Picture 1 (cartoon, rainbow, N blue to C red):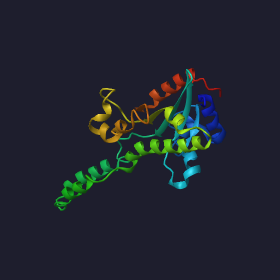
Picture 2 (tube, rainbow, N blue to C red):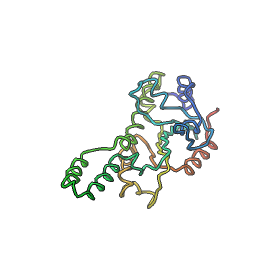
Picture 3 (cartoon, helix red, strand yellow):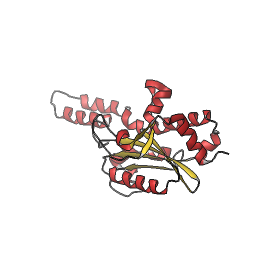
Picture 4 (cartoon, one colour):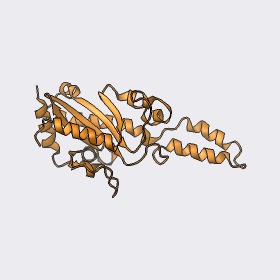
Length: 222
């Protein structure tokens, strides 16, 4: 039976060259999002290493050991409001349809386009669910190759957080089940409590609070 320290040691041995600070990991092009020097695995780069250009992954994975229990934190950084039509293609299409309805020459086109829209999905929205799952599959394969059994990998606690500028309102326990929140964050109920024991959305401030708490309690020697 491998200890939590041994599992982290395996990851470091395999992927030590694929670590960066949160500042670098959360940066969009040349625009900084979160300024923080906490070091995490750059899972985008790890994914490209193993899967090439077809890779799909979260931005970062952070290892945390407390009371001899290993928890892996998966982070996806989005330096924008996820309600922005730029992120949600279906919302952008809805805005276009609304504009078409104001045009007297468009006749029945808006109605027909709405029928088609019902069968469409927003790729970027769907990726919020698929990225952590694909990242977990890659993690499983890497640890398996390093001699960690599937049973041990499954028993590791895993949490997933989307960190963005999206405003959040309503009851903390069911905010993702209503209105626009459901359209963007409805995936939470599909991957929690398995394979992720916790899934949530964080803004910059709550993310930094979480990281500060984790660093204080982390038993990993860095």
